[in-house]
Structure formats: structure tokens, C-alpha cells
Image 1: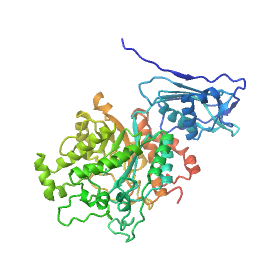
Image 2 (image 1 turned 30 degrees about the horizontal axis):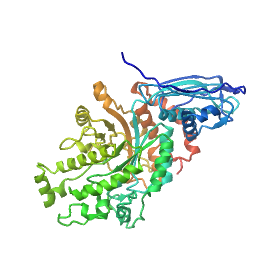
Image 3 (image 1 turned 60 degrees about the vertical axis):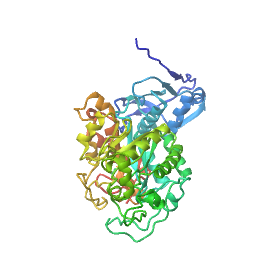
Image 4 (image 1 turned 180 degrees about the vertical axis):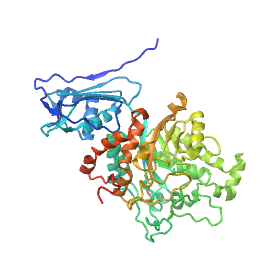
Length: 546
Ligand code: ACM
């Protein structure tokens, strides 16, 4: 018989002589995003009065789970008063098949949280934060309610790109606040590309000395014309990276770093030209000043691997909680390898039939290297082109035009998959045809306009997948490339409210979703956006903070 080991840590609030006073009747039901699996609200009845915050008995604040709950509540903006002799908070951990499962029960007397893991405390806390309304007397209250909830997909992500245009620590943390509010749990941080290397690496200082600035930048109005202005160096110091990672962790978000290998690597090769295919005609690497796919790739040499070992060792130290490290792998042209005498003889020596196998050599080496650090690699779906990738590599599908067949092949080959198709989840793309919308030239069959309704219409789990295939789809992510996004307000305009739609698609099963209902709920969130001065896209398409 299957034995179930049950560990239940219960932190009981000691009944209060000083019982909580109920709020006046609460008429407003919370408009939760993402929609929870189960919500039962008692409107028209007293709820929990939040005027003085939630008072926490010292027995709760002394337990580890209780302290984690207090931290999660405070990070979500829910006021708590620890170290009181009054117990209004109960926190219990109990087993559940979904480790992100949580349940919340609010009564006039207090708040009970039940969670499958400390991570799920963040979702319970955000649910409470979103449920804070006014009672019939205008005082802050949470309605009496019961919520039981767990996400559809374990990985719910957003990718930020500080390579094409700088994004400050403050802007990044504002995006983390937004992600946490909507229960996204992974920030994919794209830290190195052709146009800039954005993270301090102590063992390779030229990466930032040379690679963090460029001679000019394509203008926003016309990507084919440069602005003629050298940029200032821009990169995150290791202390700044630690700060962002700790800030994200405090909100229940894991940061997944990405360093591109073997393509999109002009900035690194400009810093250390010996890393590239030095023997090709006209070899002159420099930090890229144009967008798009550039020809520079790392040369398949032991010295390149030694360099990457050093870089990724520091990356693993800076991102201690990241189970995955993203190695890029997209859009790596084969041309330089085909031209290089060295690369050709390397191929011959290794019995390779075509240059695409050099990319697989890099992917395999990176997977081994990361396994040595106890991590798995994530790669864009090109890591499956021209061959196979190690089975435990997570594949991030972005090319919607190759998705249907390639996705199934990847799932059948045993890969876990994160979906981020450019047909729906490229938040750099326009949301309409208004002056505020970037004129972004899509290629392939990328969808040029992706408003929140389009994002919301996506079904991550096609009905014809087998249960095994379905289990391997672990996540959904939106990518926000920054070629057309030069500042924080623009980043917010491109992201909000599409991020809310992404969150609901990743969290709620298709049967629970309804676009009109979502729109009604999102409308109640504008006040929160306004209170944080978030430059969201209004329904008429105008930026909220022009
Ligand atoms: C990508 O858009 N090149 C991943």
C-alpha cells in the first residue's frame, strides 16, 4: 500500500481574548487576476476589518512558516502587526500534488492560510492584497471568502532584455512588483546579446569594459538609421544583480539568467576577439550597432569553453536559486563556421557532417557544464535544429511557425517545454495602430499586432496532446525585446495589461477563462496601476501616463 508521509506544520493562532471586530458589511467581491480555481465570497456580510492590519500572535511570528507568511504578506502590501498577543492569522502547511496550491479563508475573526509549500504563501498573500476593498463605511476590509487555487503551469514567466536599451535596477524591480501581483514566478533576464554585455563578470572584465557600450543605436523611428551617438557603458554590477535576485526572491520570483551561446555574441567577441572565428576574411568584431541576426559566433575551441566555464561559474554563484540557466541558442548563423578553416578542420576531426553540429557541440558542453553546477539548461527552440539536444534540456519555443510539428517532436523526445510563441507573447510587438504603438517589423509569420485579447485567446495545452506530452509543457512566458523600448514607461505600456492576460492564461485552465469577465476584472485593477504610476495601455490605446 502506498504510504503517504504527511508533514503538517500547523501554527495555531491562540484564541484572542481581544477578538477581532468585524468590518461593516462588504458589498464588493474581489476581482482576482488570475482567476482562481475556486472562489466563494459572502457579499453583503461583515468581512475582516483591515484598518489596523492583521494582528499576528507571537507564537506565529516565532515559527519559520509563520515568519515566511508575514514576509510574503508584507511584500504583497498586506499590513501585518507581528508580535501581538492577538491571533488573527493561522498558517498551515499540508501536502498537495501541486506544490503551488494554496487556500485562503477569511472570516470577520481572522485569516487562515493553507499552503502546499512556503512558495505558495506568495500567492495567498497576493490574493489577499487583491481582495482588499472598502466596506459599507468606506473602511478597508477583506470580504468573508474562501479561495482554493493552484496554477495550471508551473513556470509563468516574463523575459526582459536590457541589452538593446538599458533598463535600470529600479525599472526591473517595478516589473518584478507587477509580476508578483499577478503570480508570475520566473523572470528570464536576457543579459548578453550582440548589442551589449550587461552583467559584471570579474574573471573577464573586458566584457563590460568593451562590451557594455556601442558606437551608436538604431533610431526608434527607423531601425535602418543609426543615431550617431556613442552610448554610455551600461551593465549591472554583481551587487546590483544580487539585489535584483534577492528582491525577486522576496516576492517569490526566481530569476533565470540568459547568456547567449553560440550566436548573438558580438559584444563578447568584440571584448575578446580570440573567442570568434578569427581566420575568416574581414574578421573585425565590434559591439553591434544594428538590430537583427548578426554573423558572429563563438569558435569551437577549448579556449572558448574555458572562457564560458569562467563566466557561467560566476553566473551560478550570482543566481544560486535558479534551477535553470538559459544558454540562448537562437539565430546562430552557420556562415562563419563554414568559412573558417579552423572550424572546418574541427568538424572533420569530430566527424561532423555539417556546421549545425557545431551548435550541438556547444549545447552539449553547456549542458554538461551546468549539470556540474547542479543546473539544467534552457535553450531557444533552435537547439533542436539539425540534430538532438540533451534530453534534460528545457526547450523554449518561440518560433510559432515551426511550433506544431517541432513541439510534438520535442515532447516525444522527452524534453520539458516552455512556450513563448511570437504569434502571441512578444510584448515588444504592437497592440494596435496608434501613435504610441511601436512600428515593429515582424518577420516569418510573427503576428504584428498582439493586443490583450489576442494574448488571452491562446491555449497552451492543445487538446490532442497525450497526458505524457501535456505534463512536459511546464510553462508559458512573454518576451519583451527592447529594440523599440527605450525607457521604463514604454516598457510598462508594452507590458500592462497584457501581462495580466498572460498570467491568467498560464494559471487558469481554458474552461475557466472568459475574455469579457477578464476585462471587467482588469478594469478594477486600473486604480492599483494608477497608485503605482504604472504607464499601462488604456482601453482607448493611449498611455496612462503620457
Ligand atoms: C528570439 O526571438 N530570437 C528568441
